[in-house]
Length: 299
Image 1 (cartoon, rainbow, N blue to C red):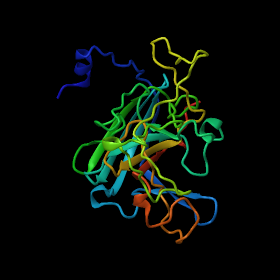
Image 2: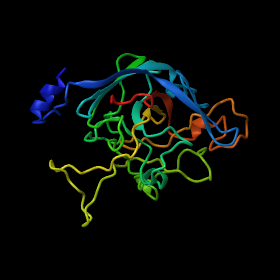
Image 3: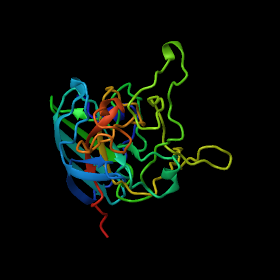
């Protein structure tokens, strides 16, 4: 197999020169969380893997009994290397990972960029310069299977996930769909059991990073001619690992999430989704999380 170094040389590409001095080196287990709406304001419970499985999943996209571990390394130049290993997987799953700036719902950032719907709470776990195929091939944040039941994701981040004003933001002002298309381009609504008020949801198939613009309305570029991104006012709270029911990754936009509801809440409890119909409420579900909230940069 051709090495990535030889491939880059043949393509005339230059690999980033990252520092080799790691100031953070932590191993973090893959865990889970669920949401209980039965008592009014949502209550989140964090617990050991494997995660609660949505009901009604087709057999070929059921998760298995997934556990795993992540290695989090941050360098002195504010770049990071993250490796996540999963085991106990159903081999048919298409799995990706995203950074999240808070665990929803109920503890979102107070910053307006999240509250007013400009930025999404999550972003693919990949470098800001990574290229996406919108599901036409494995994405930079896709897990690669090592065997029938184990998979690994190894990424280099060109930012520090443990610091504010560094992580990239997903543009949620527009999510590319084909709503209104006709003929072969027609796109029906999806996810009929999604959150209220009742509405037709069109599955997003593309989005992009938030960028800065100058007074003339042009994108602001850095010294290398690369667009200057808007950065999150919050540090990364964790990494969310998801399985795609439609077996497609969609690119930067992950799709329509299935909330990990606590199965013990009583029928009719208030909340966005009634128990028992979760598989019809979105196109991806939670496989695990890597909680980074307790990891701090050294003083």
